[in-house]
Structure formats: C-alpha cells, structure tokens
Image 1 (tube, rainbow, N blue to C red):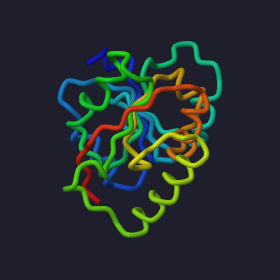
Image 2 (tube, rainbow, N blue to C red; image 1 turned 90 degrees about the horizontal axis):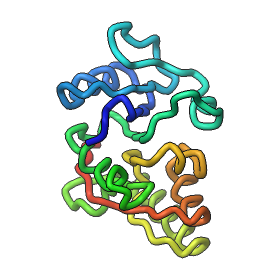
Image 3 (cartoon, rainbow, N blue to C red; image 1 turned 45 degrees about the vertical axis):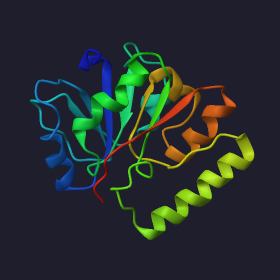
Image 4 (spheres, rainbow, N blue to C red; image 1 turned 180 degrees about the vertical axis):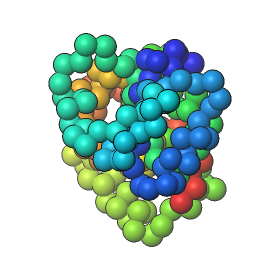
Length: 174
C-alpha cells in the first residue's frame, strides 16, 4: 500500500454514521480525508470538510494526492488495500468496486434499476461493459482530472479518454 499521505479519501457527509465510519479505517493509516458538505472536522485528524468540492479536483494543486478513493459509510474500509492495489501497481488508473460481482451484497431495487440503465447506456455509447455504478472507486489524481468525481460520469468518460478501468468485487452493506 502506498504512503497514506499520498491518498485522499473522499466521503459524502451523511450524518453521524459518516463520523463513525472514520473510526473503522485501518489502524495506523494516516489518510487525508475530505468530507463533502460536512461539519467542521475534528482538529486532531487529517480530515477536513469542504463545501465546494469542485475546487479540489478542478484547480491546480501544489501537492496533489497521488491516489483518490471515493467511498461512503456503507463500504468496508478493510477493502481499501484491495481496491487501491491495482491502481498502485499501475494495472489501471481507475478501479471500480463492483457490488454486483459479489452476490452477497444485495442492492435496493431502485439502485439495481438505475445501475442497469446507466451501465447499458455506457455500453451502447462507449462499448465499455460495467456491472455497477459504484460509490467505492479508486483512481489516480490524473485520471480524476480527466473524468469526473460523479460515478456515472466518471465511468462514461474513462473509455472516451482511453483510461483503462478494472472492476473488482467488493462487500457492501446497504
């Protein structure tokens, strides 16, 4: 696993469950964490809250992270090395954690319908086949700047920018 200081985790703030999620991150990992639209972060952590996330990925940064991981509090943080590994080893600049590849991760009907429609649209317009539009994804900062932080748009733009995308099975707890 790369130096945690070169990894930025991005989580949408969803209330106390998000702050509880942060306590489940692997021990000893000192990640930079961005809470999207969250309250002020505890001062003793590398967590900060941003109200305008667009500035993080669109502006030039003095010391940008090497890797960015999008996840939410339903993702299992123990899977961070698994989803980051292929990006770190340069197997692909984008790795999608697919909940559909793991049969034990049931999804609500509305999510399954949206994923099915979005994945079919992307396949028809770009030729790229996906099984999931996932909230758990890892990528290089460079790939983020060529795509989008929004999962559907990211997965749509990746093949248009000739970016290789891998899907790996993940556990997810809705």
